[in-house]
Length: 128
Image 1 (cartoon, rainbow, N blue to C red):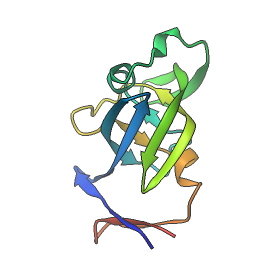
Image 2: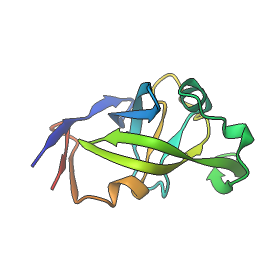
Image 3: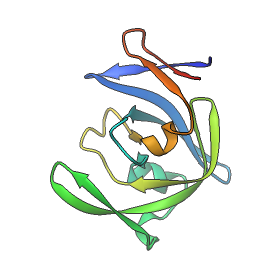
């Protein structure tokens, strides 16, 4: 079973991931969020690898602390996390209120591709 380190900041479990477009790569810190249906990345990250979230027509509804918002959804060429690469992976573009700690959320749309075990006390996540 491959194991990956969890980093905890203020009880938020974070993993490292990478988002890619052509030769551009950004390594990101994502909150493991089993309550999030979709994976979410910040505007800065997506624009940094050459995507234009403002230019996409596809929007999804997000329920946030401040209410319901419409956010762009784009498809990234390559997304790497937990030892796996997913091509043409749709992500939602939205900035989180705790931006200094994380660049987005790792949602169930990615996690459901695996059986995972999360061991918070041990600080690991395993893919089965």
